[in-house]
Length: 58
Image (spheres, rainbow, N blue to C red):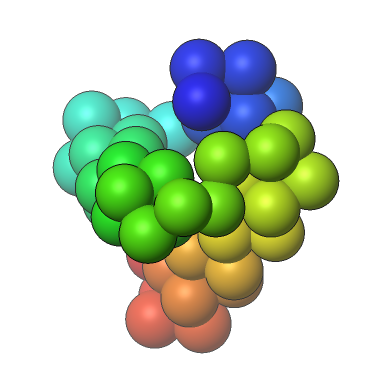
């Protein structure tokens, strides 16, 4: 999960602030708890969370 979080947050200015990183991390935790634990699945989850943040203007 750490690897996916870091890779995803690199797309944000300065690696993302605490709130953005937490938002993505929470989505990753939810996905893992639901049984989606491969790097591919977590990567998709993280990219979706990032897209949601960006769509909100964040």
